[in-house]
Image 1 (tube, one colour):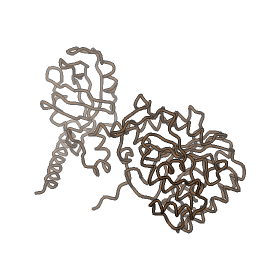
Image 2 (cartoon, helix red, strand yellow; image 1 turned 60 degrees about the vertical axis):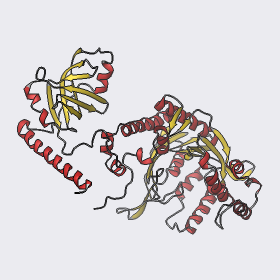
Image 3 (cartoon, one colour; image 1 turned 45 degrees about the vertical axis):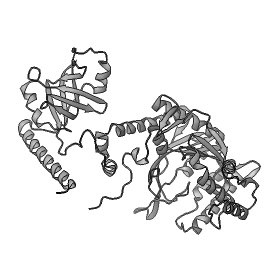
Image 4 (cartoon, helix red, strand yellow; image 1 turned 45 degrees about the horizontal axis):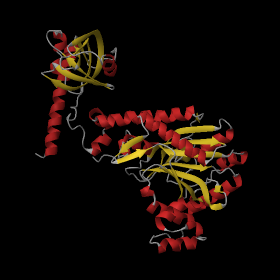
Length: 498
């Protein structure tokens, strides 16, 4: 028998034993999955309350706790019970525990969820303990727990059966607790900064606001195709036009029908905001304040480790125009190059393989990605992007080929993207029509012009700064996670083969 078959057989036998115990428990106590049980405290509250309790001392308080059994010693005399906040030792002995409660011990397996009532004490060895007076079976588990010392080590199992990963891996559990703190921290920061949270449609009849392939579906009642949003940008700008608030934001789920990697998941979280009468430099300041506050919230410092690197979220971050960064890395001075043809020739002369129809800005952006992006380890704002690839940003005064846009990089990853938003309705329509023509030329036949957005811009949008932050990548940095799948509870996975 192979090792895999042996493990399957053991799991099957162990599961059968648990089912037999379940049957016996039903005969012995009746309801093994009771609807009502009220605990009086959590293990973390007990640990905090009795942090100063001396060894071999009773607390003088009787409490009721509930949680999952993670270890058992001496035939159940000592058990470690864990709830979501921590663990505590349970002691069951004939001198302190009635026979009715002790009779349950042989029926309790690792992973079972029980309730325990009894007095609190600290043992001679310093272990905070509850002397069990009553034990209540709350959930009999029918599958064995993963082996406690190694937990779930198979990567595929960790991502597909996240409940097992968190049950047995304290690092994973901590990451998802930190994720919750980061997302709530973003919301709190934005609200404290005067931003109003709004909600925009996930299901859209026209997709836009970014360049990406959408997920397509069909609405039966409306009898039309619809798309999961790739970005909330156009709806948020329409909200800004409405005057609902001068500062709006949304923590949103976006969907892009593209590749999966350690930094990409087809469903992901962004924070996007718009600030009337601000510009892209104001958004840089906002990013630095937000990142610094989140680092303090998670680490108590703006400095923290990511892998073998030390990252500092202390502002101000480095700021460098894209043409300057490329010139420093390659010697190519794009600002002195006048035409698309000259840009392609200069790129090829420097050893870069560029497409025959690429524009000046596309060449500049490509070389930046190839030679500069990977060097941006500490947080940096790369500014002055080509207008060719930035249809929603205002031009840099005196340099019409560049726009007031920046992307924030850290660990060579793009974390944020921001503009001084274009609000000239005629220029906006011109650029969106050009973008649509380019999309159709690439074969993106579903791409449409969003006339409702353009109609709103005709009504007048105030000058504004706009910002989008990749929340998942930011969480990866702050929790030292090497893969985006480590910080998304249920990442996209290929369907399991039969």
